[in-house]
Length: 195
Image 1: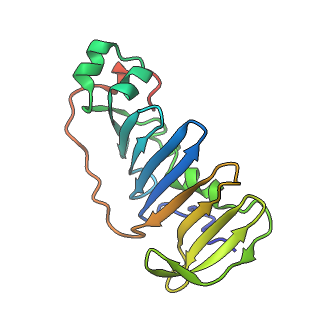
Image 2 (image 1 turned 135 degrees about the horizontal axis):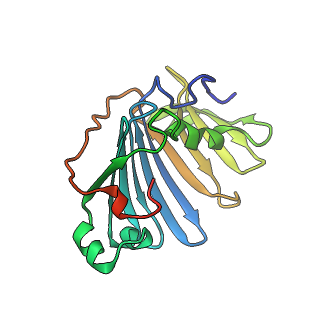
Image 3 (image 1 turned 90 degrees about the horizontal axis):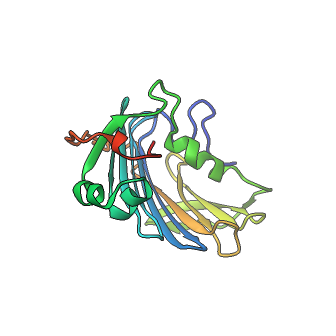
């Protein structure tokens, strides 16, 4: 059985967590780090195969975005604006600031739901911790869950034969993340399509 809390998701309001995602796509390698303090405060850092890099931070109803020139260009910034805003924090109001916005749990939970029957794999070690493994051969994935203490997911590996190969590493369960707002006087509304 996959550890799951029906009311809050795997990483919902009761848990702080860091999720590191490494995915190989046909376009290249994607790296994403998601840090969630609770259901409204989170940060993600993304590097895409096309050279775009950005950080997004949401604290309460405020959202802050910091992107490189490739990210800014993809979101409608002119070359002059790209030069001005490159790696600068922009501030705006978060969509769903009424609590309806996406959380890490909403993004990750679907990946933890088995697509087929699970089989119990061997006890092994991941990142220095003893883990039990749950194998979903229908999608070519293995979920490694802490074998001692609270059975939090520690790693999900989808092999090369999977439709979406890659690795998700879960760390810092219930550790304070210290998310804080950067100073910014630039408005996110200077860009298009950023939420």
